[in-house]
Image (cartoon, rainbow, N blue to C red; front, side, top):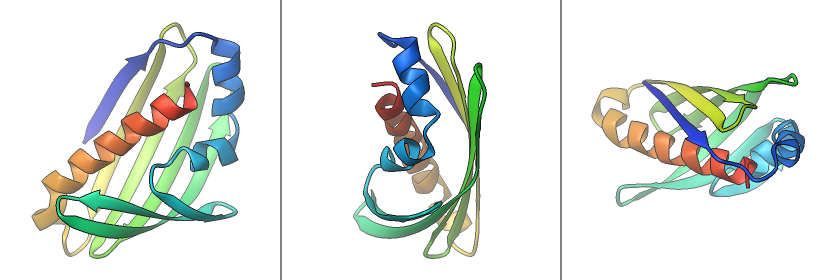
Length: 129
């Protein structure tokens, strides 16, 4: 599944400064409870369930034009890979490619995809705020 969007920002330089900071990126993840280097623990509500997420930022690289991140998230019965690109243009463009696998993937796919889309949008809004 692929998602994308555009965000209008007031100050592109300020957005670049925040977006190129890996710690700021991790702190923008909704429901974050703890961070240890590139690893994080978060909680998310999926439907009526509260799900514990263990994640790892496997790649985070930035240039003057864009930032690219690869995040691996483990949830009960699910493995979620999220590859995100944030392009520093006016307006700022972002895209996220999501792969969901694991024993619960077929049953929880639509709910998980919707939640990942929502979280991706929240992260991008946080980074560009």
